[in-house]
Length: 286
Image (tube, rainbow, N blue to C red):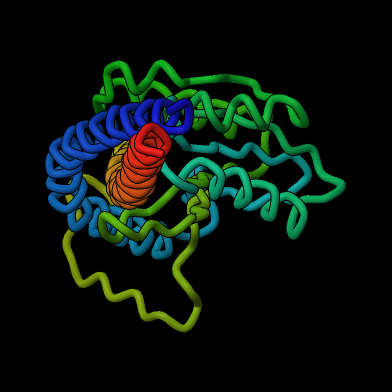
């Protein structure tokens, strides 16, 4: 009977876990739908703005080039690592940590590499081995363009003051609910147009190209960072929904297996009791 009691306890425990993971899956699915709609609507605008900015910047001569496009010898790098504040999302946070480690080992060994972290999970790991100059994990309490723009302005200030020669953003790019790609994007300096690409700007500018570029650059950089964080936000909910779906399926299989074991044990117990009763009756008759 002790074995039956233990099996009943395990079945109850697994069933409770299954209910929790199923509820978390549904919550993540609802949040994913909203986050996916936001990033899908934003991408074309952000990509076109970046393309326009790169083309305009490439058309300026050296003296008119923006301070944000200044190419320097890279000695000091600032990495913006974007993850989440919560776990239970499969390999979502682990992949960012791996991506950051590979980025450092493959490109920046021997250089000064500092971090700005967005997400408690990546901050907990990175802060043990590198300098974290700012932890912006509270951003997820109110993820708006205005709050992201404030962070982007701080990054731009770090670059223009010469505190860092290069700033990159590492985040999970959303593909679908079951797939996210760890992506590294150069934030500053502005990535120039490839030399083999033609820059055709047959336009009349009012005001001048220089003024337009200076106006567009801060807006484009803020939009670029906002898009990356929105991508990561959608990826988080997709990863969590997938992880909770798999956890629910595994819990269901385990519960069914435990029920089968329980029924077999109960059947064996009943059979033993019947045999004991029959044996006792025969002993009395003899």
